[in-house]
Image (cartoon, rainbow, N blue to C red; front, side, top):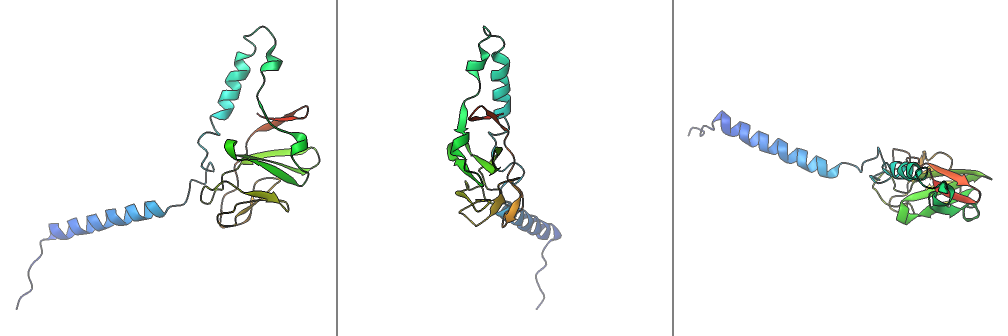
Length: 162
């Protein structure tokens, strides 16, 4: 009994479809965008504050009152710890007295909002990633990328987004 012949074009079609299916499955398994921490809104934010800064000089000279809104008070950020501003997706830390840092609060592993700041680390509740409060670097995975910095500055006792 002879085997039925399958045309080469049919084999190519089956292989092409199988390749496309594999690509779709792998795309679905790819990790969260670790280049920006998943915050599409944090990159345009400086432009918003710059446009507010540009709009202030056009006023009557009372631009100081129209400055950026306060994110937190310096007294709200414990030394050696930090505060998570979940609604703004920012975490502010104070590793040493008077030294403040801002980072994305979106974990670079799977896009969860970090849950706590303790023991010198910013901690994600989803899979256990931990990040340094000093520079956002990964202290414990599975995250492979650091938390992206968020520009902040201290104005008196207020911390504002830069």
